[in-house]
Length: 374
Image (cartoon, rainbow, N blue to C red; front, side, top):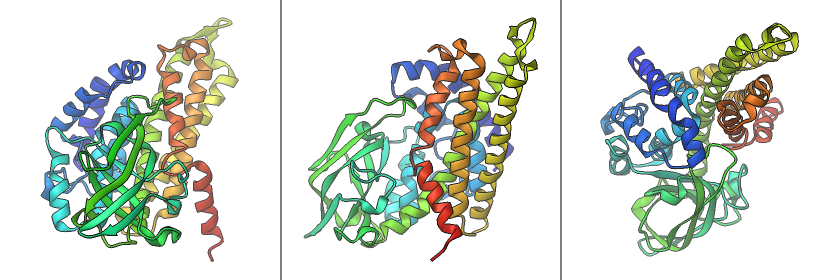
């Protein structure tokens, strides 16, 4: 990765994302204008292969550095900008050359399509092997039946990678991935869900009722979806950790600036140990999380196993971001609690990172299992 890309991300975050972040949070409008600006700069596809029109950044560590800078500007708009990379993940992991050529180049265009990755269901969240959406083989393809919930971009998705089971009751052994497109008979985009934070990156429901999917839209073989999903999850968790670092860093910087300027009892509030120690703890947690995140990314870049390290990075960074944003609100007091303050928004945005792509409880379970292998 060139320094130019990182500088572009940093400049875009400061000039394009930070100034509009609160307005988008209030309106919950989809940030189409920012998405198109990012596409012009190559930020929507910098980590997709050059052969499909992407920027060709293969290093997960470099991707994390870019993501932290963008999330410093605004986390939910960053997820909108990078949606194509997450949609591409299962296709790159499982798809054929023809499938990659079909769905990846549009993601690298000046107007990338809205897309989604559909895993979570009303009864299956962190336990991805419990997916109940069924894919039943028929002549020429499959028929999908089931419901997905909490899916990013659901109500506007033009295409979605959908994980379903071809062998109900077999858990991970039956999980298979398919690409479903808007307009397919039996595929319906459901309601948008109101959220506590990350409000301009929409989440909603997808419904499949006798939805026919041609066989050439299956990614990989039947039953290969779960292993592909786990590979995608591991990389996504490291990138999510980088996102958390961006939020936390923004909040800490804002709180430090406030603590220098705000006077109480005749002196700046940073001179009170209760304030300075709280911010010192936030700094410590963020730096520790950054080391874990970069370590996990470097393992991935060197082809080493990194699932446990990805879980540790995601856990540490998401909890560090939550602590840093809480510390910022606490340091600003009433000024941080009102709606025109960015720190209250960052607090709400940070909470999501402790939940999606595996909750903190699941991350601890993954780490614990590494201590007691069967």
